[in-house]
Length: 104
Image 1 (tube, rainbow, N blue to C red):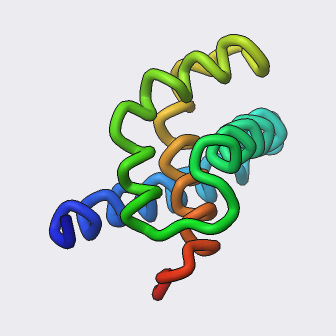
Image 2 (image 1 turned 180 degrees about the horizontal axis):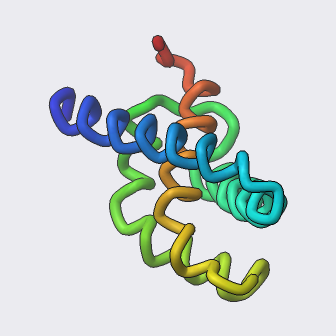
């Protein structure tokens, strides 16, 4: 799981970097922030507030499905389908900082 964890953390970090760049567009910033907030709330529900990076990585498996469903149901905006992978990875990256075993 260590190698897999390193790979998913790389994905999360890359998504966060893409989100930061995309958020410079004022028109897109609020939409992206809403998506990340929604995904983070869903992570709190699914993983809880006390978790390890491994637990978070397990939640990442299949996240593309539940992230899409959550956004589709609660925060659909024009073009949302193009940004959910980036927002999802960024949300996981941000949420990972709260893991009991987090290290940069």
